[in-house]
Length: 427
Image (cartoon, rainbow, N blue to C red; front, side, top):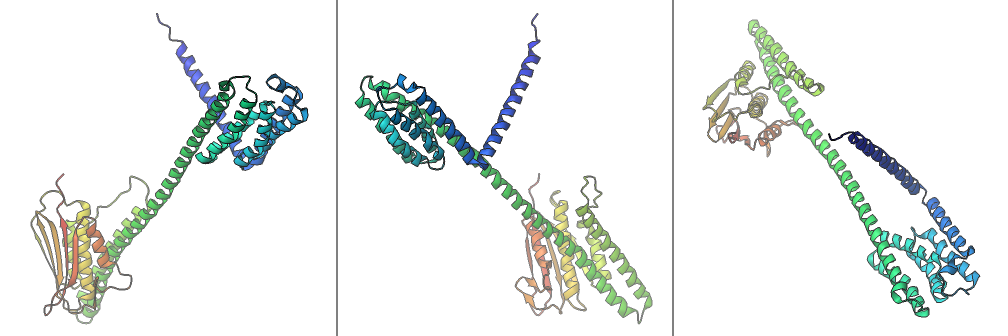
C-alpha cells in the first residue's frame, strides 16, 4: 500500500520556505530604506571593510603568493592597496571619477608585477557604471581596466596571454551582465510604479468626471421636478386670485389643486433626495414617470390654466421604450409645457403630439403664445443660469436623438419643440 504521510510535511516545508522568504524580503526592504535615507553610512561601511581587507592582505604578505615581482617595495604595495580601496567611497555618486582615481594604482600594480588582489575592487565600480551610465561610458571603463592588464601581460610574459587577459575580460563581462539584469529589474519596477501612479490619477479623474456628470443629472432632475411644479402652482395661484373675486368656489378648487401639486412635487423631491442619501441596496425606489403618466401631466397643466390637446399615434415597434427612454419623453414634454406656462402669455394654447413609428418616437409640443420674450440662438430665452432647453438636449443626446426648439414662422407665431428618438435594435 502506498504511503501518503509525507504530503503534510511537504506542505509544511513550503510554508516554512515562504515564511523565510518573506522575512528575508522584509529585511532587505528595511536595509534599502535605511540606505536610501542614509547613503553615506553604507558607503563608509563598505569602504572601511575593503580598506581593512586590503591592509590585511598587505600586512600578512598574501600578495607574495601571486606577485610576479616579490621584491617590490612594501610602501608601494601599501599605496596600491589604498589606491584601490579608498575611491570606493565615491563609487555611487561619481563612479567614473572613482575608476579614474584607481587607474594610477592599476598601472603601478601591473608595471611592478605586484598583482594585488585589491585590483578586483575595480569591478565594484564597473558595476555602478553599468548600472547608471551609458554604454559609451562603459566602453571607456573597459579601456581603463584593459590597458593595465595588457601592460602587465607584456611586461611579465611568464604565463600565457589567455591566463592573464581572459580572466579580466570574463570578470568584466559577468559584472556588466549582472548590472544590466539589476538595471532592467529596477526600470521595470519603476515602470510599474509609474503605471500605478497613472492609474491612480486616471481613477481620480474618472471619479471627478463621474461626480460632475452626477451633479449635472441631479441638477437636471431637480430643475424638471421643481421648475414644472412651481410653474403649475404659479398658474393656479394666479387663476385662483382672479377667480376669488367672482367665483369663490373656483378659488377653492385652485387652492386644492395647488395643495395636490405641492404634495406631488414634495413626493418626487423626497424620492430623489432619498435615493441620494440611501446607500442600502434594498432601498424602496418608486418608478420614474413614463409614457403612461403623460395624461396626468397634461391634466395638471390644464388645471393651471393652459389648454392642452394631446394626441398619441401608433405603438412602439417592440419593447424598446425602456424606462430611460420613457423618462426622456416625459421630461421633454414636461419642460416644453413648463416653458409655455412661463413665456407664452395669456390666452395661449398648446398641443402635444406623440408619434410612434418604425424609425422611433417623435414628440412635438407647440403653442400659439404671443408673449414669448426675445429669442436667443439656443432657443427661447431663459433666466440667467436656466437649464431648460439645455437639459432637454442632454436627455435627448443620451439616446442618440435630436431636438429642435425655436419659434414658429409669422404670422402664426408661437413656439415648437420637436424631439426624435431613433428606434433601438431589437434584442
